[in-house]
Length: 235
Image (cartoon, rainbow, N blue to C red; front, top):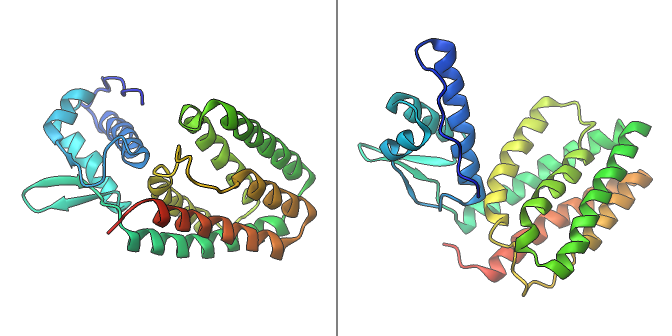
C-alpha cells in the first residue's frame, strides 16, 4: 500500500487545521480498513504525527474521530489501538448488513430508470472483467482492482435508494465488513463461485425480480460469513 504523502497543510488558522484533520483522518481510516494497521495494533501518536507532518493535537483529533466509527479503541492513559476483530462482531455486522442492504435494494429497484440500468450494465461488465482475469493472474495481484469494482457494482445496485439514513448506515457497515473480507482475498482453498453469484444478482436486478434479487443479496452476504469462519479462527 502506498505511504501517504507528508502533509504540509498549514494549521495556523481554523480552516487549515480542519483540512489537516480531515486529510489525516481519511488516510488513517483507510489504513485501518485495509488492514495496513493490524487489529489490536497500537497507534503511536508521536510517530504518526511526524510521518504526516502535523501537530500532536491534529493527530489526536484525527484518530479520535475514528472512535465514532468504532474503528479504533481508546485505552485510558495509554492511547489508541485499532479495533479488534471477532466472530461475534462479524456475525452482528452480517445480520445488520442483510437488513440494511435488503431495504436499500428494494427502494432502489422501485426507483429504477433507463439511465440506472445502463450504469448497472457498465458496473457489472467492469467487475466481470477483473474477475475473469483473477482466474489466471492470481487473486492477490488484482485484489485492489476487484475491491474497487465490486464496491462499484454493489453501490450501483442501491444507487436509486433515496433514503439517506439507509445509505449512511450501509456505508458504515460496509467499511467494517471490509476488514473481514480482506482476510479472504487470495484464499485459493475456497470453492465459492462469486462470479456466478454476481451474475445472478445482476440478472434479477435487470429483470426487476425484487424478491429474488434481495434473497440473492442476503445469501451473498451470509456466504462471506460462512467462508470466513471456515477458514480463519476468530475469538
